[in-house]
Image 1 (tube, rainbow, N blue to C red):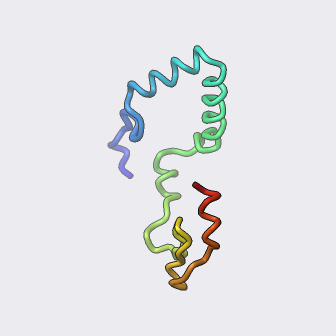
Image 2: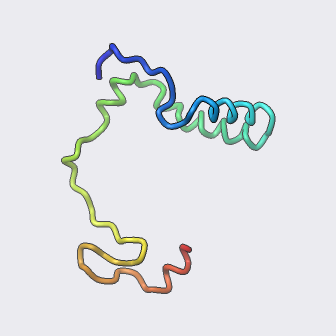
Length: 91
C-alpha cells in the first residue's frame, strides 16, 4: 500500500450516519455502551499502521472449506447434512 494515499472517510458508513451515531452516544446511555464496546474491540488494532494491517491480509490462495448451505444441503457430499427440522430453529 502506497504512503501517497490518505484515508479521507469511512468506506462503510456515510458521514451523516457517523454523526448520528456520535450524537446518540452523547445522548443515550445504551448508545454510549455500544460505542464503548466498539472502541474497546478496535483498540488492539490501533497500534498497527495501515501498511501493517494490509500485510496481514491473506490472498485468494488459502484452502477453503465446504460450507453447508442454510437449507441443509452439503455441496461436498451432495446430500442433506442437517435434519429438516433444524431449519425451523434458525428461522
